[in-house]
Image 1: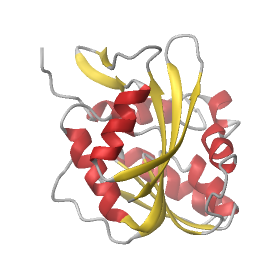
Image 2 (image 1 turned 90 degrees about the vertical axis):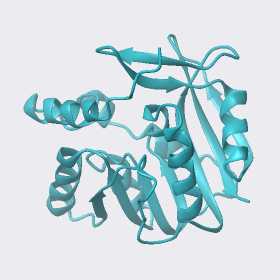
Image 3 (image 1 turned 30 degrees about the horizontal axis):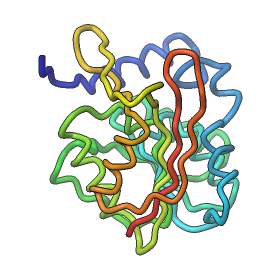
Image 4 (image 1 turned 180 degrees about the vertical axis):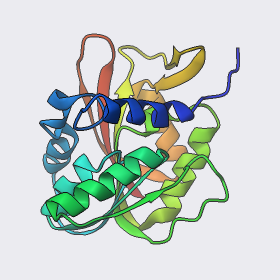
Length: 212
């Protein structure tokens, strides 16, 4: 059955997180660390400065960490509640950053700048079906020459990619390692390094790619 992804669910979940008094998406324990940033820092010959864009920035947890590392950071998200939360935290912490609302599945979207680094803030696995082609085309166009795309995504434990569902609608795309690499190469990226992290239900994958 081909069902349309309900991207509104992410706004609903950010509203619930704020009402629950959490520090961010996934609860307070998740917000106590920045695993994505740690994995980026492990990369060999990674960028150490420049303009950085995080896709699916949420309340800005990773953006603030990257800003502290010396990057000039912009975060975008589909959730109005997340973006307002990120702006509030930027003011409260004094860690500057640019945050704005955007839907990366809209083909006509124009991102305002070119970036040296684009970080997938666990956003790509939220994008379903043909919307992934649009999403990746935005990433490619937003990058400067030889710009870095760092993917952080759910990954299947075998060679099969699949969707998970929430309330009857596709919720997450869990890709196989091979399918993700092929998908990125078709979008114009050169994949330089892949790491897969074993977990109980589904694995996690990071990909270090550049604009070819």
